[in-house]
Length: 112
Length: 112
Image (cartoon, rainbow over all chains, first blue to last red):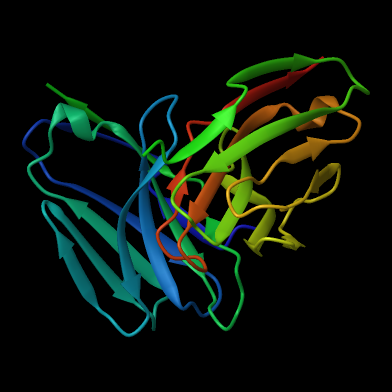
């Protein structure tokens, strides 16, 4: 069964606006990662946040993690047409559990 | 550096046929894994390997076989293809464990 669930399923925004998507998960985690997938391509790693971290930044990306609520958010600021893609969260449980579990993804469309 | 290379990119099989999806990485990664991606379901882990000679089952292993005789290669075998195995298959690797995964471009399989 999938550990993470993204919300919303789809998001359409104007170029220059911010995009926020959320990920909720069911059981305790070690790390949470976000990936991007352009149409017809493989996934690309964006950012990893550890369970003892609350916020992380990478360029125009900001990720937060709230372990008490078992949720994470990904914020893309000043979106561009090139940000049009599907975004997935993925979690692992650590402790020699080598399984990375993905959610169903959020599809983001950035309109010019 | 080619990264993770998957072949073939597209394949059509008849029910009952067998085939092997190839995956090779040139990054000296210890961890390799196979996922399948179906519409609206995100990625589901089929099998993974933490090093040469070591493999284990993921979430949906039935109908698939793997082996890891070298660090570089991690082929996925479909023993007797079924229409339910129609999917896009992704191979991914990481330096160790389930840190940042590097994905191949995918293999789209249709079983008639």
